[in-house]
Length: 255
Ligand code: IPD
Ligand code: CA
Ligand code: CA
Image 1 (cartoon, rainbow, N blue to C red):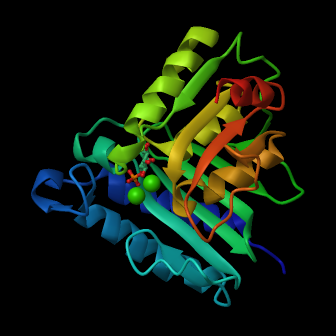
Image 2: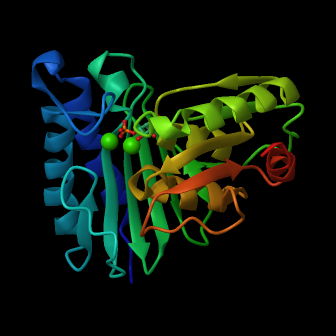
């Protein structure tokens, strides 16, 4: 298949304008399940825009997005999309949210695009062709975790994970230079992919959060694994760690 990545990138950048020009976010918030999970009319609008545009570019691909019927069982060629990763940041105008688009085949991503419209950073990768930030090739760092930075997600929609997450975080904090929490898992994975940080981890992350990041990180020379050493799949959420090649074993020793 001849993949038109440049066309896909253009559409994702256009969709970013919906995020940058959004007004009246506070009036468009609807609660999903639980106390911390919300959706705005902009999550829905970005997903609809991407559905329309991406389907024109690769009509044979199915489309599954977080805001809709996410068919986790499908193994057909499909787009796996998180229209706004970092919705809470978006609601509060915190300027750290991304659009995450993966093209997947079987149980694995073969192309990924993650766009942070606030910083105008576009991360992209195609299987076997390397990973790029705004067109320049990126690589993971070769720092150890002991001499590096760790990123984490709090599993905000799964309060049953909080104690375990924060106990692990304490160990990682003691072991590493420091920790960071951005509020966008897709952006965190890109930070590891471009060598600014060494490890990102989160319990019960969902396929739309990590599908694009997985291929970007792998093409940058990094490792995507579940806590128990499996390959993260697209049919269910997982406890995941995204790391450079050195820091993964140090992280596993802290589990
Ligand atoms: C969330 C963000 C957050 C992570 C959550 C995700 P959303 O995505 O990536 O950083 O901690 O687990 O669900 O809901 O803003 O698309
Ligand atoms: Ca997300
Ligand atoms: Ca989202």
